[in-house]
Length: 511
Image (cartoon, rainbow, N blue to C red):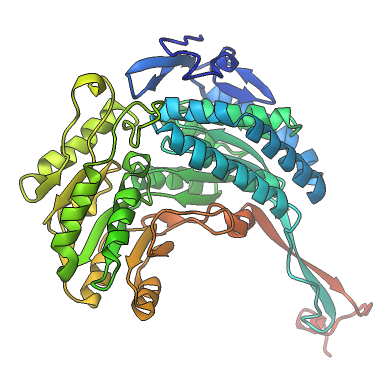
């Protein structure tokens, strides 16, 4: 089924490429066989943009079989051959950048300027990084560690990787899952979120058009309970990588461990934003608004808890609210839009529920409402600032995943760092100060996989992304991620040519 709905070609120029279905298996698009359909909905208008057949377990089996068949040849390709293929891949994606940007904004509701300036260029940079990394996967150099033997370490591909990506950054998350896996010689089956499959499918098609062999990259678009769980538990899948909520991550881990798979989990976050009393207040306010509202706050590293030392607290609250009020809500495709809708009306209502319940115990300084008028049909929610909540309250402890920032005061540096660490999560954090010793302490003592100083949100391909505690384990991006998609093998050569070794006496005979 292909139903373009009410979407115009300007909003969705690539829509004709999806007529054959929302699965991509063995280098070809296909329709799902579950017997059920799903609609990609434009969250800015509520209109159905594309309706497709969901994948069932048979589709997962076919995708895994295709990946398994492609694995020996792809694993046996030289690093240079895989690198060349990835460089061609980057060129194809760059040539189709506008199609990717518009499809991403359509399915997610993110402003086109965010898709154009962040999601698509970041993805192209990721491809280029792993194209280079493919030629630099090394084990430990040879050495005679026992005295009688030469040892060295090989890094080898694992096999078929089964990955599940979320809906908030579907293009970048597809890249973060696919690229290190295939650069290391693995093949992959990716299940994107059923809300946002469009750019993952465009990504796989671009890889095929760049000459990456059929079956190396496969996409199955289905529900988590059917397609996702079957993929994670599949006996021919050697590793699973999941990005999403901590609750679902626990379920993924349960299924994967039953077949003793390697597991990579990038889970929820509740990033603290710690402002010491010597910070540049204007810089902190600008950083807080940008860090809290990027992607309409649907970012696991978004600034969600601002802890501000008491001398700056009231001024921070006042200026942050004022700056939030200037953020322009609107159609993602309109040139003047700063903030688009949330991914769905369900998510919008979930965010609104957090804020409405907080009115009983905290102060909603600005926002906290859905807009009316021309935006009423979309999943919009105004940028919201909440002050004076208790540390153990729901809005401080739970991941809201929307355009909501909570601000709390602290008195001493010890208290500020303790409060920053006082949630189950540990994905990202930032600290704001002009004092190098204060910021140095923050980088050491805040328990998070990334700590920014005097900034919040920037990521780069060369550096790892992943968390502590309930935020999961494993890294995306960087050479650290690349290594996770390999197996380590120790190879040991006897150098003596002695028939009867000295250690044999522990089994038979005397010295």
